[in-house]
Length: 250
Length: 250
DNA sequence: CGCTTAGTTGAGTTCGTTCAACGACTGTGG
DNA sequence: CCACAGTCGTTGAACGAACTCAACTAAGCG
Image (cartoon, rainbow over all chains, first blue to last red):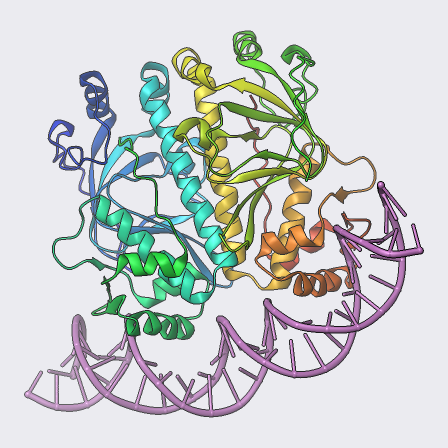
C-alpha cells in the first residue's frame, strides 16, 4: 500500500479552477471566490491505491477532490469491508472529522487523485462571514445523505442484478455530469470494489456482472468497467437517476 | 392509515422546552434561544402510524421531534420498502426538502409524535444571523451521515444475527441517552419494521430475533422489543456504540 | 362473532456463499 | 532472459443462508 505523497505546492489558483466552469456547479460571487481562495491552503497529490484519510484519525484538514476517483469505506474488526460511497471531483471529504473530531470512515484513491486542502481552523470564519458558503456545506452534507439513502435501499431491497445495475448507472451518471469521460465511458473499479459496495462475494459479483455483460450493457476490461447502455442499466435497477439541479462547490 | 392531525397551537415555549435540559444537548446562549423561539412557528401532533412527510413532496417546513418515535424510509415502485433510520426527540426532519426542494424519503410515526414546526423561509436568516446554529444544522446532517454509514456497513457486511443485534443495540443506546425509558426498556417497533430495516424477510427476521431471545438478550411483547442485555447485543454485533459527545438541538 | 394484525413454525426452493482450480497479465529479482 | 509471485477475472461444484409458501395461534376490535 502506497502512502500519501504530500505536495503542498500551491498550483491552481481558485480563479482559474478547471472544475468551476462546469455547468453543474453554481456560479460564485467575487466575494465568495475570494474567500475560498484564501481558505485554500494548498494542494495534495496521491497515487492510485493510496489511503487519503483513515478511520479514527483526527484530521486537521478538509479536502475537495480536484481530479481523480476514490471511495469511502468502513471495515469490521475481522476485515469485512463495506464501501459506502465513491468520491469524484468537486466532492468534499473530511467534513466529519473536521466537524465532529474523529473520522469514522476511511477514504482511498482509485486513481491518482489531486486535492485542495482547506484549513480546519478557518471553517468557523466561513460560517461567520459567508453564510452562503455555510449553506453550501450543509447542502453537500444533505446530498451525501441522499446518496446513502439510495445505497441503503439498494443493498437492502434490490436483487444482486438490480444492485449491480444501479451501482454502475449511478457512477456513470455522476461521472458523466462532471464530464469525466472522453470517448470510452470507463469506470476505474475492480470487481472486488463492486463486491464490497454491493455486499456480495466476489464470485457472485463476477457472475452477476457477467449477466449484465451478456445483455450488452457493460464490458469489463483491464480492471475497469466500460458502460455501454446506461439507460438499460437504469431500467434493470428501476432507478430514475439523480436530480439534475445545480450544485455548490468549494 | 391515519393522517397528520394538524394542531398549530403554540404550546411549549422554547424557554421551557422539556428536552433542552437533557445532558446530551449543548447549552444555548440567550441570543440563540431567542432566535429559535421566533423561528418556531408552532407545534404539530400526529397519531401512531401517521405519515409525517412523504417522498416527492415539496415541504415548506422543517421539523424537530419533540416527543415520540418515527422512521424514515424509501420504497421501490413494486412496494419493496427499506427503512433508512429512526427518528427520536431532538432530531431534525425535512432538511432535505427544505434545502434541496423535494423530499426523497418518507417519514412515518411509530408512536404518537409531537413536532416543532419551523418556517422554511427563515432558514436563510438563520444562516445569515446565527452562524453557530448554521453550524449545528451541518453537524446534525453529518451525524445522520455517520449513522447511515453504520447502517450500510451493517446491512452490507454483517450476518442476520449480527445485524439484528446491532439494530436493537443502536436504538437502545440512542433512546437511553435521551432518557426515553422509564423502567422497562421497550422499543416500539414490530418485527416487520425490523425486517424492513435489516433487508430481510419477516419470516427470517422472526427466526433471527428468536435466537436473540433464546440468548436472553431481548424479549418480544405486544408489538415492541424489550431490551434485556444491551452489552450482549453490542458484543454480538461487534459494535462499539455511538460517540457520547454533546449534540446540538434546534 | 368474524376480521384483521402480529408473531410463530415447518417444508421446499432459490440465491448467494465458500472452496477450489485455472488462465491472463504485471512486476520483480536472479 | 526466465522464474516466480501477486492480482484480477473466470468457472464449476457443493453447501448454507435466506426466501417463499403455507398453515396456525393469540390478541385486539368493530
